[in-house]
Length: 321
Image (cartoon, rainbow, N blue to C red; front, top):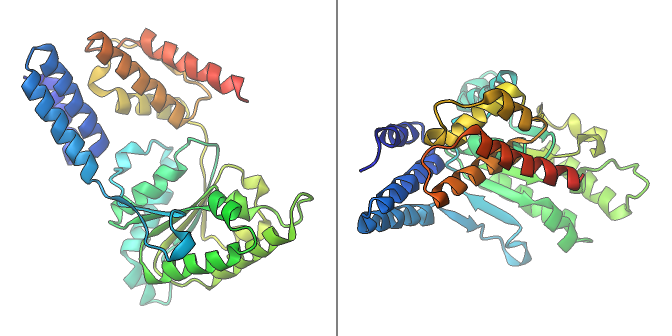
């Protein structure tokens, strides 16, 4: 039988539409039943979870010819509660949502909702997740354009492919994420630039300025200093992401660890060990801790276990700087 804490966590994750946490807790229940010798029940729970994950739609958009595989279409189920960011940034995201939902009211006054958004900041700080959250909240599909592959594969004809993508933006309403955007958005005067890339950037500037659809266009970059200055005025909002502060790190750890967290937790040491790590790296460390607990038969994790996982992430990070 699932513990009371697990049942509470299941109910909470259901009503907050946090599907990934619901899956995680369900598997925790399965592991608990397995330890009790209820193998048939544990197997049934795992099968239900696997089936639910499999049914989550993720498919390649049916682009004609050689564009297939460069635009990935998903129906995200990432709830807003998964996005651990400062209040100021959260309010700006709320404003995007509010304007979208009131877009017809704005149109009646000759105005348009903000829909061309640039997200910048270090890797793993929540930029891609923001696009997923917006698509989920607004009940839209997320179309991710893999810019680095587009440029590499179609050098010499990238501008023509960009035109096809912007035609899609007009025809198919959704959230469009240009990930690794600096692959085409680099400053045109850079010494290592080539004529082809200048043409690609000029084409992008033209297409995004001429786009008047209702779709949300989001560009994400890890290196805003590399971007051409002409890009910034094409975007109606620029959101900058930073590494999480103490408040965000604690909230993130509480979200991921959930019922696996011991009642007495040495937060001071944990927060010190997680300093200068990104959201993604902290998330990985928490999940590494949970996996270690499950495999060793433990139900509650103390701070020492998490600190060790965080230190491993710190060491990996510094080794590859």
